[in-house]
View: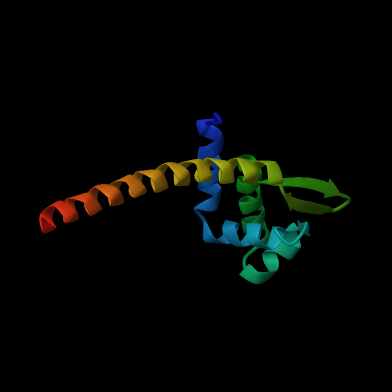
Length: 114
């Protein structure tokens, strides 16, 4: 199993816990965007969107780069992959546990029918 920094995962899941930030990540999955472009669908201030971008950046899920007067944002595929790997490992673990539980219940039903 891959080792993950708890702090790293906590920050990523904190960032993903907000619908606006998830929407921003969804938009960034289609390619880089400026903070202004990310703000368009939300009807909120640029300052509020910038705070969301800062949370995403602190989590490592988003990388920003200042180009002149524009701050361009893009997804960090490595950070997203780390979260995806962590979730996949847990999914495999729980699927195997549910499979075993299903077999136990099936065996109990067969014994009850006898």
